[in-house]
Amino acid sequence: MVSPAHPTATNDSHAAGSTGAVRMFGRFQLLRLIGKSERSMLWLVLEPRQNQELMLAMPRQQPGEAALAWMQNVRRAARLNHPRLARPLDIGEHDRWPFVVYERGTRVTWAERFSSQGEPATDLADWVAQAAQGLAFAHEAGAAHHDLQPWWLTVDADQKVTVMGLEVASVRPISNTQAGGLDELRAVRDAAAGDVLALGLVAHHGLAGAPALDEPDVGRVVNRLPPQGTDFVRLPWNVPRPIPEPLRAIVNRATDRQERHRYHNARTLQRALEGWIKTTAEQDGGPLALLLDRLRQVGTLPAQPGGADRVAHLALMESARTSDMADIILDDIALSFELLRVVNSAQVGGAKVSGDGPVLMLRRAVAMVGLDGVRRAALSLRRWPGPLGDEAARDMETLIRRVKRAARVATRLVPAGYDGEVVYLIALLQNLGRLLVHYHYPDEAGQIRRLMQTTVVTEAAKDGKAAAESKEEPGMSAEAASYAVLGADMEALGAAVARHWGLDDSVLHMIRRIPPAAPVRTPETDGDILRVSASCANDLVDAMTQPAARAAKALGLVAQRYARALGLTAREMQEALQSDGAAPIRSSAAAAAPAPAPDAAVKANPAAGPWAAAMAGTLS
Image (cartoon, rainbow, N blue to C red; front, side, top):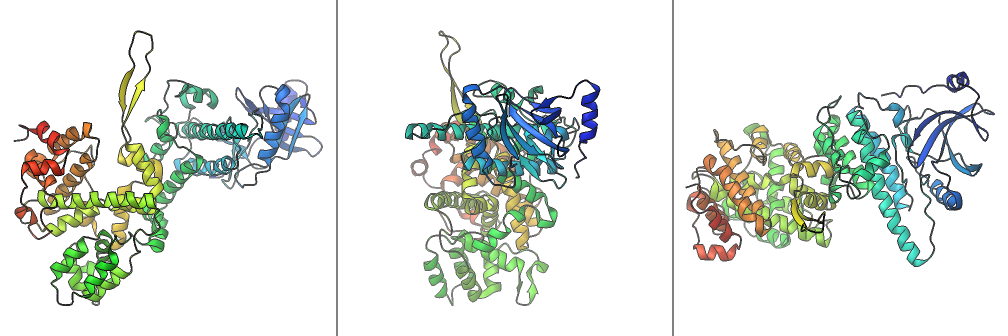
């Protein structure tokens, strides 16, 4: 989209002349006010000697005794060299009014571009990502904006964005003492968080076609949001142009009522927007584009601890049955996925595997690639933990244990007659996106986990008589949190990788976990039965990970959702959950799994006791 030409200097000067005398500020002719807030303002001016339009920025109030600090801050910020930060042409003072001059050129401010029709989502997302990149650079260098408004952001004819006005609204002194230095760092951190919130409000304005809370001064809106105020800002559903759900989640997170949900720095906002932009580019492979380079560099997943011993064991199994080899391979999620990738995406034995349908059995995969193929697949894996740090590796191990437990539970939930190995792999694949994000984006995975957490907030009493109240603040859904952090849904990432491996639509349907808010319908096909069984197992295990106070209720809700579809009682689901390690994965494992003694099950699973009590007498 090409920016429309801004009004020429000649037209503006004629307009100024028609209303009276020409207004001057030093050597600059004031053409018109582009924007103003409580703290700063920006003018379009003409430099008569060169007949050149410029933009002149200044604080809204004279700094007075703080003028020196203002000059120091602005000059320090002006030394930053980044393509997304506007470089001042001049910094000076006139009649005790300090000012900064910026080039106009083909640039127009966002305030001049915004209209009641809203901006196209992809254009605005790209602009905001560029602005966030510039702000992140400034924040990391110790500078901030302090009064980010739509008219401090410009876009040129090539859609390149620059941020103007760094430190123009600031009069904070620069401290050299150690204590002052700590205060300085704290002030920069708080100002950076305010800049990111303000950028989110500007993005809201651009998408909605109107400023948040109908207040054009972004600074005033910030003061009306928590923790200073009680208002909240979310994108309306009735907007001039459609807003894609991922972008809506990103912008709503930037302005979230809960401070803990907002972006902590501009870099995280930038990454979320760039992730969404990348996934919407169909020519780049959609969600897969986020991961392709990482997959080539560090593989899908790392071999689990003990991978070397596992390879050595496989090397000695020349005469072993494929089912015995499959049991060893199933214990390593990375090796299991690698074999599925090999047999579904490549030619094996001169024939394209996908021509005979997707392979979802490791026994068949082993038979097709042979022992040498299994060894090659094992040796191609990155050793544990790959590029992960210690903390991320521990988180990954925890997730792997949870995913494998859900897969074992799924083999006990699926009706008799279905191959246990197949439903086990489907339950694993329903977590493919989550596993990929934890491995390739550990920091982002931590953000997603925190955004999904429910927290208890204590509200102070409004008067001396009332007692303080505590209430739960729900976290985001997994989908919304993933959108807000990555710009893409974790499940979509997993499905994109599975399709990249060569798995067809029938398999993609089975590995798509049933959304929490969706009704669970009675399965009509074998694929539906496998999908529902795996989804139920994953939901049960996820419910078990909640705090004890909520685990019993969550487990009961899962049982209610799936009881009719699977024809199982709550007690049968409980027994499947408690006996998940009782037997190896075999064909028809669901029909053969023994149930342990109730007392032993409760000891092995402390949350089982309250759940059993809560569910007693229901879903018979």
